[in-house]
Structure formats: structure tokens, C-alpha cells
Image 1 (cartoon, rainbow, N blue to C red):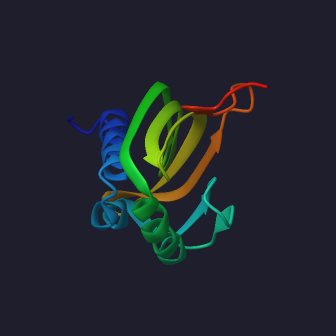
Image 2: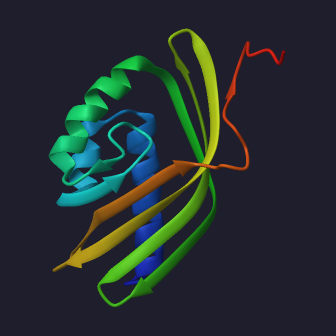
Length: 140
């Protein structure tokens, strides 16, 4: 990695995806700044700090089985002590006996605090061009 922030940030992105897949709140807590602002599909749509988001995630994760997230088209921009990563995602999981697959996009904004990059903002939303698919849905 030799002081290449892009490689380090790509690694943080991969850790972030893995923490979501594993529903690992401890690892998410390590990645996020305590003051992180999160816009997500999980109601409410905006969380003003990680602790509030974490409380909601516990309930959300309890309802999900076999969560899988694949990110693609990953773009990384670094400007001084601020960096952002944009990507597309394919998320699949089981919830309430249904298989759910969703395409979407997410943006991670990281700030450098002394020597550590912390996730300070996450925005995730489903792709409006491709509605989510639930196995067993039938068109009338």
C-alpha cells in the first residue's frame, strides 16, 4: 500500500461491505465516525450519528438472513483529507421467507483524522431504474 490512499480506501470499502454481509456491528463501529450521517433505505431515511443508526441496524439485521452484497463500478476520489467512494451494488437476502434482490448505488465519504480514515457519511439507495425483485412475485 505504500502510502497510496486509494488502495487503503479500496480496502476500507471492502471491509465495509464485508461488515454489512456479516452483520458485524463491532466492525462497522470501527469504520464509522461517531458523528457519521447516514442516508439509507432503512427507516428513518436519515441518521445523524452512528449510535442511532446502530440501534436501528440491530433490528434490521435480525430480520435478514444470508445477506450478500456485491459492489461494482467502484470509483475513488481523494482530495486532501477527504475522500469519497461511489459504487453500484447488488444486494440479496432472505427476509420474512422471501428472497429479495436489489440493485442500487451507494456513496461513502471518508475524512482523515490524524492517521485514520473514518466513514463520515453513507448514502445508499435502490436503483430507481430497476425495481427490486422478490422471488414468488407474480405479475397480474
